[in-house]
Length: 246
Image 1 (cartoon, rainbow, N blue to C red):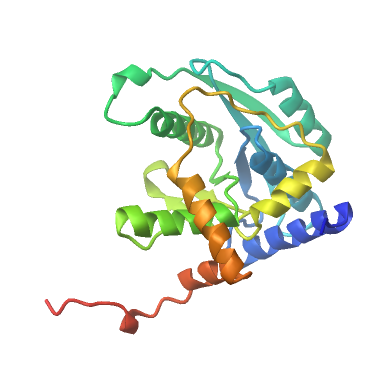
Image 2: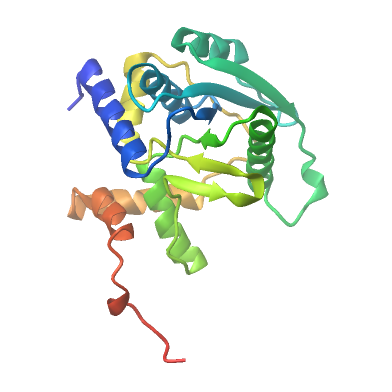
């Protein structure tokens, strides 16, 4: 069932407010830098944080940064992103990078692209006095990462709503962490986002999309499976996990 446009926006705003409060994401006076790729998640993040910054406590400022990779053969419409931010009263900036994928054949192009974009975000934040970088990962990203790390890395870890990056003296925050992707998709449709689509020839189907299919299948057995998986991260029972004697 489709949700009313206004009620969905209020629902998402409430979940962002809860996430900010419960996990201590933002404090009064913070300068928050949003990584704005132009996808539905980062557009929703920018809008929801802009709303929070104007009408709610804590009081903070929002700046959106778009990292433009000149070597990937596609580009987002930066003028649309600039106009989108202007409407919201959000400062907007663009940083150009160029990645030579031939320099490190050991790592995948997708990993290198992601890393250099993230590095550019960190460097911009440090140069301009931002202590908080907001990324658009949602609830489905968090639980899929948990399952991927268990299945492929042998670790119980994920994307926390708040992560201190000591090396860069910056904190990563994920204000959308309590919002399911289906709600963000509907919000994007309701709000009329012009989503910037990638046409990268390196991008293929990933383990992440396979994990999402598994979660969707589990949802047929338990409609609340996404919430249950989330709760498991906050309800770890060490006494019922294997422990070596030495």
